[in-house]
Image 1 (cartoon, rainbow, N blue to C red):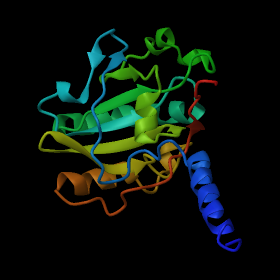
Image 2: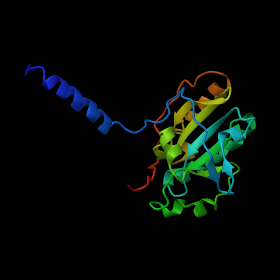
Image 3: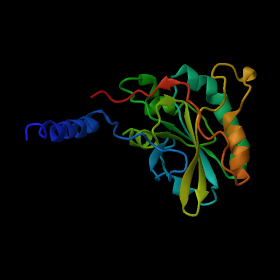
Image 4: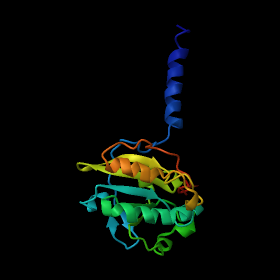
Length: 202
């Protein structure tokens, strides 16, 4: 009997440790359905994915005011919206940063931005956690399938986070060409490069 006791004990320890070390959520993977959200835009209105009935999809980008990488990509995010919004894939920008950690990312500071697309505050940070966003910027392409929006690309905008003139591979644009043609993106996931999201302190 004594030889049998350590095994169930080991199983219990392993089970317990799996709950301790496993992240609460790994976020969306390519092919997952993205849940809708309702977040406050800089104009004070609440915005959700369901609001735009004509949208074929969305380019959802987690970004902010203060991160140098977000600043470097700002013009490229604007360009993505200018190119793809008329084709049914508008940009939706979301700021997930806690202003207590990054004061320059407060809602009042967000209002200084004059974008042609929504710039939303994820005050609870629950949307960023659901998506699995970790960086600013961190981009997700969603494609409509019936009433659902399916994640079709996750990661970086391109391969040069510092200088747009030195970009060799435009990950999002390449993915969009295939997605809009009804094909899966041949490169559907890349590593997001940017500042870490400023999470609320415990």
